[in-house]
Length: 255
Image (tube, rainbow, N blue to C red; front, side):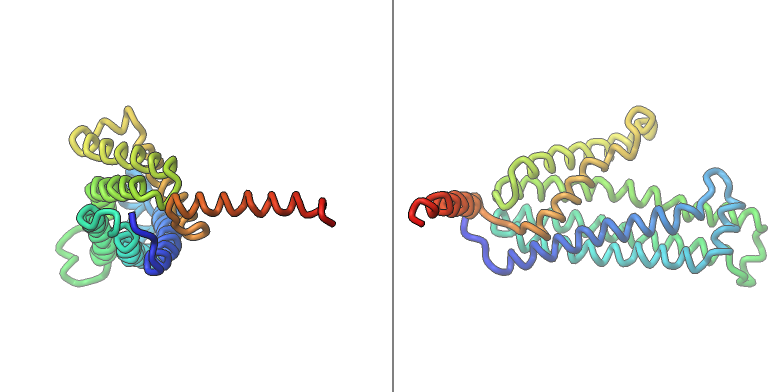
C-alpha cells in the first residue's frame, strides 16, 4: 500500500463534514419537518396539515434535495480516498451510493405531487376532495417505498467501502470490521423485507439500518477529527509518543 497523498487527506475531511451534514439534514427533514404533518391512517388530517403548513413541507423536500447533493459529494470524497486500495470496487461503491441518492430525489417529486393534488387547479375538480386527499397521502407514503428500494444500494455501497477501509488500514480495523458486519446486515434485512414485508414484525425496521448508521456516523467523526493514516503512520506516532515520554522522564535526572 502506497503512502497517503494530500488529495486523500483533504477528501477525508470533506467526507467527514458531508457525512455529518447528511445525517443532520435527513433527520431534520424527515423527523422534525415531515413527520409531524403525517397522521398515520388518516388521509384527511394529513391533507389538512399539508395545506396548513405548505412552507414546512417545502422546507422538508428541500432538505431531501440537499441530502441528495451532499451524498454525491460524500461518494466522490470516498472514491478519492479508497481508489488507491481498489479502483474498481471504489467505483462500484460510488455508483451504488449514487443510485441511493437518486432515489432520494424521488421523495421531493412525491411531496411536490402531494402539494399539487391538494392545490386549487381547475382540472382537479373532476375528482372529489376525499379522492384527492387519498392520492396525496399515497404520494407521501411512496417515500417509504423509495427509501426501502434504495436501502439495498446504500447497504451495498457501505459494505464495499467498509471492506476497502479494512484492507486499507486508514482507520482502525475494529471500526472497519464493524462497518462490514453492520452494512452486510442492512443489505440482508433490506432484501428480506422487500420479499417478506412481515419480516418487520420479527425485526423492527429501525434495526435494519441503525447499526450501519452508527458506523457511518462514527466514521464521519473519525475522518473529520482524526483523518486517515496508514498503520505505519500510527506506529510511528506511537513510537514518537513513547520517545517523548521517555525523554521527559529522564530530564529531571540531569537537572
